Length: 136
Image (cartoon, rainbow, N blue to C red; front, side):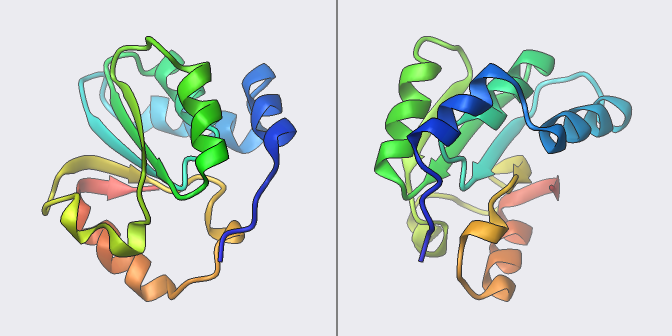
């Protein structure tokens, strides 16, 4: 069961990134080469993490997935027209029909795990199948 964060929480993240998002960006800037990658963001919510990551890594292509329709509406509205950014309503636990093995270079699940009640081992198995280089 997913706990909803609320519309204002999603919009607030567009004004200024969370410290955890900035820490991740700084970590990635030091360790990931500046090249094109396909990124899956599981539990993307309102898409603000993708917004900030795309700003710092413009060559990366992002697909954000979530089950929260309202959050995805915000994500799509806030990032309409941005190249290399997309969003879909997909439940990652039932996503076998959507993704093949090693479909993405990296898989992110930023500020997500604390909002969801699920079998964590299933989540890790899916991440290992989808990504080629690693996950955060």
